[in-house]
Amino acid sequence: MLLKVFEFIKGNGGAGSIKQINFARGYVKHQIDEVNEKTFTYKCSLIEGMGISYKYLVKVSYDIKFEGSPDNGTIAKK
Image: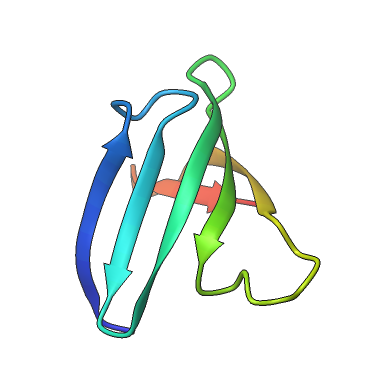
């Protein structure tokens, strides 16, 4: 999948914001449910686009925790 555009179509990145990611062949929309800077957690839901093709599936939720890595980087854990 070739990433073409990443943009917020609602909000500025906080809870309630919606971001759209456009690929060469399709798109996805994520709603940001929670951003917690104290616990370094991020919760979002896939609400539209590729991956929401099942008749009864309305959203897919993700809970992600960020941790520091030994090389001063960041590791995202589900």
